[in-house]
Amino acid sequence: MRNHYFKKLWRHNKVLCLVIIVFMTVSTLLSKSVHNPYATVPLTPFYTWEMFSAPYIESDHTTAYELVCDGETLYQPAYLDHKKMFYTYTITKFDRYAQHNYTDDRYENYKGKLQRLHIDTAYAAVLSNAQEQILQYPAWLKSYLSRNLGRELKNIKVFKHYVHYDAQGIQHTDSSVKLLDI
Image (cartoon, rainbow, N blue to C red):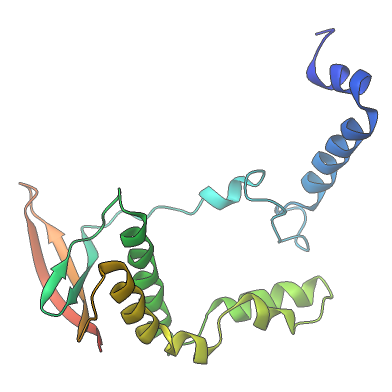
């Protein structure tokens, strides 16, 4: 291991080598762990494994969203069309906000973290969505879809279906709820 990366980098560019080593050391010391309850803010998404480590809860039931524009169902998800993928994710997020009385539940989470770090809690409002912003989503969705479909939409409905699959893999709808009708 005479010619490892850091030794080569040290010979080539000492400043860059020090910056990388300091970054790795500081981010490791500040990373969220059981032993460090104060540092709960991940520094970078590619360096923090926590971004991908949410527990997966296996369930027999799942939810599916149906978007109906002027009586015609838009099929979701469309993996090859980034515009359709985008509104698929936003509908799910809007549904979560609707379940919390159109408030962003991340506000209290951010506020608590900022208090532990002794930072002004006013930044929590900047990091989360206000109720007025959340309530503008239906109008935004209608204009976004109108632009992407190339026609003016008169009516948009979003349904949330609670579904399960039987042993043969056939989907059965247990119940449905209308989320939006604009």
